[in-house]
Image 1 (cartoon, rainbow, N blue to C red):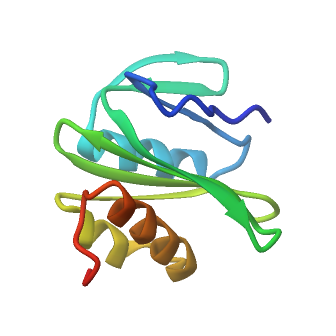
Image 2 (cartoon, rainbow, N blue to C red; image 1 turned 180 degrees about the vertical axis):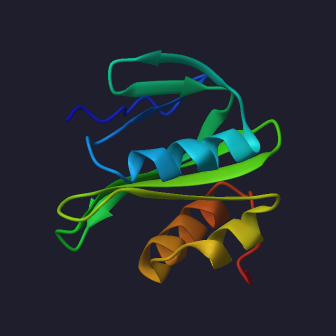
Length: 121
């Protein structure tokens, strides 16, 4: 699977695994954005990637946070388990909703580095 890496991407793009969880990720996208195009297993949507996080612990391949018209989306590419996504109106709420708090902590650190949130979370 090819994972997008261009952090200056103007439109959101997620590559789906061929599994039943792709539907849930698509639903999360639709809560905060509009899907503009699908191309094979790629879904394009309105939004701008503001965080691009690298993998860790041999289980997380990478993660991205997108600023979308109706909120924020955190999407995680996992190595051996299903990919997942959460959405929220605000960044702090987004991180609280993450089912993996290690991803949330790393994302928070990157948001602090970019002055998008305060270090106190």
